Image 1 (tube, protein in one colour):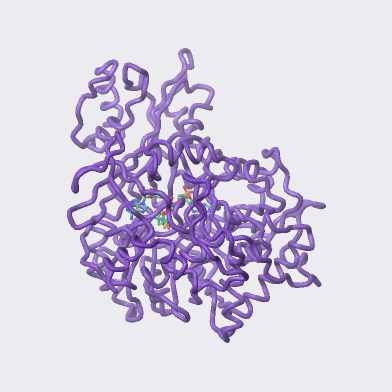
Image 2 (image 1 turned 120 degrees about the vertical axis):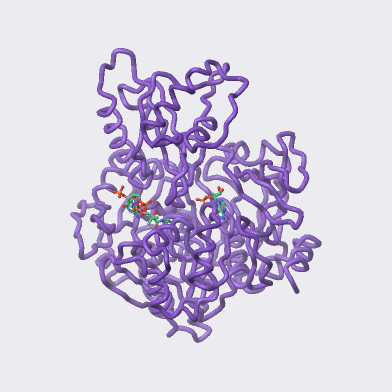
Length: 631
Ligand code: COA
Ligand code: AMP
C-alpha cells in the first residue's frame, strides 16, 4: 500500500487503524478500544489496556533471544571513550537501578527529575522510572539552576537523578552545584538525589540527601516491570510557551508505545538489529523519542553521542560515527548540518568515510533551508527527509514516510501529514483556507495516540494554549500553507516562541528576566535571522529614568543575568539600549515589525502604530549592531 492508501485507510477507520498498530506491542492486558472520547475535547487512547514501557523497550527483546545484541552505543568524543551495552546488560542495569529506587520508596506515579548529560545512564534512569511506573521529567543540561527549580516546583519529584558533570568542548558543566542551587531555590524538596559520579569531576554529596549511583544499588533486589494503565503518564517534558512558566507536556504510556513503534518502520524504515542515531540531547523531545524510546521499542541499536557536530574533533565526526557504527538512519537538526557545512563547504570530510549503510538523513527541530538540504543531498548522497513535529506531539506530524513509500521531494516542505494527523490551514475565523494560502496550522481533534492529552497539573492552560482558539482543533502555533498536492510548508511561529539552534525558547521568558534587572524599565526580545542557528535572540532595553548608567554595562549585566536565570542554551548575547519601544495605540509592542526591520525584509508601517518615529530610532539601533542592512 502506498502513502495515499495508508492515509485513507486511517481516515476511514482510525479506531481499527490504531488497534492494528497496537498489535506490535506486548500488552499485559491488550486494549479493547483505541479512542476514549468520553471527555472530549480531551481525548485518551488505549485507556483500558495495561502495559509497561520498559518491558517493551528492553525485556521483550531479551526474551525474544536478542539479549546479546547491542542496545546502546555510547560514543563520546569529548571524553575519548566508546562503550557498548547489550540488551541483556541493559535489562540487568535498569532492573537494578529500578530496584534501588524502589527500595528508597519510589513507586508508580511518583515523579523523578533526571538532570544528566549524554551518557547511557540517562537512558537507564528513564527506563528505570518506566519500569516502576514512575513519571520522569528530564531537564536539559544547558538550563540554569533557576529553570531546574521551576520544574522541581511544578512536578514535585520524590527523587532527582543527576550526574556530577557534563562536558562541553570548552568547559566542564558543573551539574552538581547547579542541582544544589536549584534545590535551595525550590519550595519543594526531593526526598533524595542519586548522583552519577563521572571521573572528569567527582561531586561532593550532601549527607542524608544524596546517594551515589553505584553504592545505592549495592545488594538491592532487581525490580520487575510494573504494569500501568494505558493513560498513565510516561513522562513530563517541559517546553517553552509564551510566558516564563514552562509547559509540562504529558506523554501517555500506551499511545507513546504504539505510535513510536509505528514511526520506526513507517517513517525511518528501521527494525530489529538496525542502528539508529539521533544526534540530539536526551533533554529534548527528539532525545526522548529517538535516542531512548523508539529505537529500543523497535529493537534497534541506539547511539548516545556526547559531542558536537564540529570541533569534537572536527566536522567529520558525524560521518565517522555513521561509518564506524554502521548507522542506517541518522537524525539531526538543520543547524548541525549548517555548522558542518560551514567548516567543510566542499564536503571533503564526508568523502573520507564509508557511508554505504546509511539509507536516509532526517532533519527536524526548525525549518530546513534549501541550501542545507541540497548540500546534504549532494555530499551525503542519501534521501534527506525534512519532517515537522513538536514536543507536544512527540513524533512527526508531517514527513516523507520512506518505510511506506518514498514520495517526491519538494525542497522547503516537510512533505505530507502522517496518518493520525488531519492537518488544516485556518484563517483567523477558523475557516479552512484555499491551497497555497497562508494561515494558522491546526490539527483536527482528536490528535493521534502518544500526543499530549493535557499539561501537567494545568488542564485549563492546556485548553487555553491549544484548544480554545479554534474549537474542534489543536492549534500548533505554527503558520504556513498546504499546496495543491497536499504538501505542507511551515513558515513561522504565531506566538512568542523562537528557535535557536534547534532549541525552542520563549522570548516572553527572556523578557521576564530582562525586566528583573533593576535599571530596566521596559524591554522586548525578538528572534533575528542567523545563518548558523536559524534565529538568535536580541534584546531591546529601555532604562529607568535617572538610571544614569553606561548602556554597554547594562547590556553586559543583562547577558550575564540571562545566563544565570535561563542558562547558556538561551544563547542571549546581544541587546541594545533604546529610548522607547514601538507600540500600537493599545500598547502592544510591535515585535513582528522589529524582526522584519532587523532582518532587512520589506515591512509596512502598521496602521495601529502609536508613534512612527520610534521605528527610525529602532532602525538606527539595529544598524549599530550590523543588522537592518547596517554593516
Ligand atoms: N549542557 C550545558 N551547556 C550546554 C549544553 C548542555 N547540554 N548544550 C549547549 N550548552 C551551552 C553551550 O556550551 C553554549 O555555551 P557558551 O555560550 O558558553 O558557548 C551554549 O549552551 C549554546 O550552545 P549551542 O546552541 O550548542 O551553540 P554552540 O555555538 O556551542 O554550537 C551548534 C552550535 C550548531 C554546533 C549546536 O547548536 C548544535 O549542535 N545544535 C544542534 C541542536 C540540536 O541537536 N537540537 C535538538 C533538536 S533536534
Ligand atoms: P520543539 O517542540 O522544540 O520540537 O519545537 C517545535 C517547533 O519547531 C515547531 O512548532 C516548529 O515551529 C519548529 N519545527 C520543528 N520541525 C520543523 C520543520 N521540519 N520545519 C519547520 N519548523 C519546524
